[in-house]
Each structure stands twice: as C-alpha cells, then as structure tokens.
Length: 405
Image 1 (cartoon, rainbow, N blue to C red):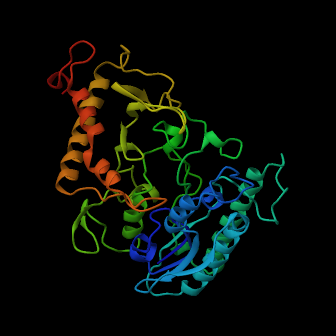
Image 2 (cartoon, one colour):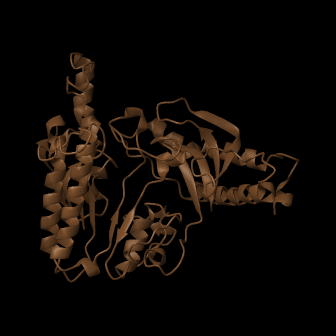
Image 3 (cartoon, rainbow, N blue to C red):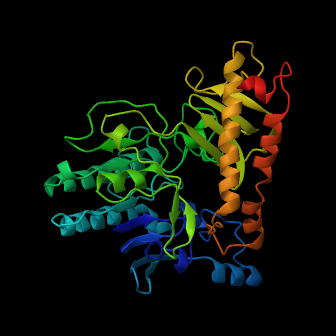
C-alpha cells in the first residue's frame, strides 16, 4: 500500500500515513495548498514575518516539509515545500504513481494506492506546460486541464500494465467547491459551499472504473460516503470487511463507519447506506435519511456566521436538490416528515450510545498539535444532544413520538 500527495490528516509523525497502516508514503504533504503560501509576501503581505515571537512559534509548529517514508522507519523530509512547488508537484506525484504501479503490477497480492493531487485547491498555479492553455485564460481552468491530464496518465498506466480488468479505480474530490475564494474555485449547482452543511459542501461527483466489472455509462444518485471506499476495496480484494465495531492497531475497540458498497459498484444491488450524519468541523449539523435531510444549522458560505436552529429545516433532496424549500411546516410533508424525524432520532441515539461507549478519536489537527479544548469539544457532543431534545419536542400540531410511529 502507498499514499502519495496531500494528506491533511495530521502534521506530526505519529499521524503520518506510515503510522496509520500504509507501507509507503511519497511526496506526502501534511496540509492543503494555500498553507504553503502563508509566508509568501506576494500572496500574504500582512503575514507577521517581522514578529520574532510569532515566527518562533510558527517555525516550531508549522510543518513545511514534503516527506517520504516506509512503515517502521523514521520518515524522511525530502524538501521544504513552497509556493513555487505548487505548480509542478502534481506532475511528480503522477510520475511516482506510474512507477509504483509498474513495480507492483505483477505482485501476487492486491495493492492499494491512495493518490491525492494538490490541485485544484486554491491558489491554483498551473505547471508551465499548462499555463495559458485553457479557454478564458484563468489559472483555475489551466489547472483543471492539468488535473485531467495527470488523472488520465495514471489510468493509462493501469491499462498499459495489463491490470485494468483487475483494478478498481475510484476518483473523487475531497469536498465541495470553496465559493468564498471564487474565481479561484470550482462551481457547484447546489446551495452552500465547502465548510457548510448544505449539499454544496458535501455532495461531490465520483467516478468508479473497473473494465469488465463496473457497468459502463451508468449514472447513480444513491448515498455513498468516501468512508465506504475502504470497506468496499477490502471486500473486492478478498479481505475481511471491517465490522462496525472494529479494532485499531493497538487492539482497542473503534467504530468503523464505512459500509461495503461492492454490490452497488458492480450493478448488483442498491446502496447499503440509507443515512448520513453531517458535521461542520467538530459540530453536528444535520442528518439525511433517504431523500430527506433535517438541517439544524444554516450558513451559505464557510466564512458566514453559523446560525443554529431549534427547529430543523427539512428538505426533500430528490425534489429540491438545491435546498430552497423548507418543508418542515408544509402540509404536503404530512406523516412522512415525522417518520423521517423519528427515524433520525433512532440513528442519532445509536450514534450517541456508541460514542459514549467507544469515544471518538481526538482530532489530529491540520495545522498544529492536538489541543485540550479540541478534544473536549469532540467529547462534549452538546449540539447533537440539543438536536435530540428538539426532535422529541411536540411540533406542528402536537405530534408525539407515538404518533410518529
């Protein structure tokens, strides 16, 4: 197994890919793209680079490296990563991915590659080969063409190695478009943006490719979460699929949220996921049950003020994917609304019970050490408990839990 590229799941060695189970890591970058431009005066002229106390703290905390490593060995810092490296790092990642595929194509055991290009996170700086190539002349569009090209190079390497019919490829972004930084950002047809609980923050396109196994040309709008990929890959590789209560590498119990979606991928059945809980950073935001979504917070952009709601907004995502029409008090929603709220109550209660018995892992921190406050915030779960209280209150016509059944 190998991790290549952006990680953003912890910036200290104890959180690196090779400490989390990967055999190798290459071009590992702990942060997102603009984190590597903070000290660049052309991009952040107001950065306090002349404040000795601040810069001392920053240098002690900030991880400016590109890393490689092998499980069981100390990671190696291969270079200091800067703004200039953003232009060409994806090309190097694709080159390494192709070499790794060729080296392991004939292995007797399955391999797993997690390749995360840095593009198209802002600031998008295209490589010299792609600068000015896109219609419209914007670096974002140039970088989009570059991403498409590098993705195609990796797919072609799989074909050329003769393993396309024996390799599952899943391609997807890691979050919705960051509208706040437009025009250096993607476009979304949905309401909201990255960092919000509206669909634009979470709903992303995905491509599943496996010639001879995954039906070609098929469109699917069922619920699949990126955390389902691991369980699905394990099943298709002939490995044990983790159960919901699993064990970590130290043998301690942990909650495994991924679901095997191999039947859906192979065209043999529907998605096995009928619910999804939305979190905004560490805070509960809402829950989807089938085509219905109950939302307890409301803000349309990441940088907007968060607005918590005592009564959830309710959206039918099949009829209203843009989340423009709150049907909580609509007479058309009728008993269906209360079934959704009642069932979501069961899901959230199960979540609270599990996380009380097996606490969530503390966040690793994207830009520094884990803080005591962040750990306490995870364990507090106050927002979810408040949501449950609101669900159980009598709403709209004095409907009770008994009536909802």
